[in-house]
Length: 238
Length: 84
Image (cartoon, rainbow over all chains, first blue to last red; front, side, top):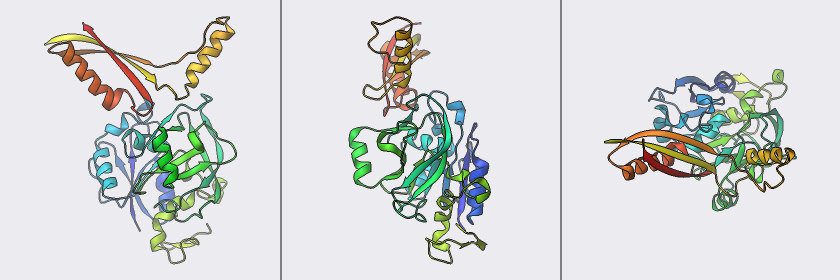
């Protein structure tokens, strides 16, 4: 059972689903307030979705200077897993823990609906329970989700297999190369615009997002990582 | 120390699609301003800064832009300083 710190900023709104999804997967999640400076022995850090500081100036621009971000950066540099979901992805880009940036959707609209994604990289702490190339459905909900980066950065991301998720079929926000999520060079810091925490159980209409959280517990699973039906004493048909 | 008025212009970097600018250009065309060939939308920030001289105020403003006010991945900025 891994200790998962879910960081709450003023304006965060997806922390409850994120904690629930991590708990359902067998982890030990807890909230950390952005003014704290200690991650309380976290194995994993998740920056959840929302609108930290009202998206003032730029999405994530002010949250990145919160006191807790120093500890998050230290954790990341030491190789600890860090996941940014939606606004968390924006914060990680603003903090320089992930390359590139997220700007206004190409059609200016806030887009909130399920999208199709392809899991492009399964050698990260958050995707190792998926099959490479697998297509899944996960909801998006964002106004600033268009991923941009300069040409050398994009070339490096593609060449090094650091595009973790890509939109398939339709590109909902004009993201470069259809990029929905990326990881850093060390592959321990991952950011994704869609919300896997919002689709992790059949009662929610699907569970394609659940394995992001099961991936964290995969090394402790009693069965093969691709067949995570018994994690932390929970039997789950994922 | 003197007080300076620092004006900062932050614009989406050239080459990055600016859908706000495009929407503004379309609206201007719809109003009959057919001569508009392009529009880009950015931000204008006005700060009052205490500094020894205008050069020092400009240095401070650039440091602020690099760290917070502009995102170097997606935006360019311009700083202008005048006595407050």
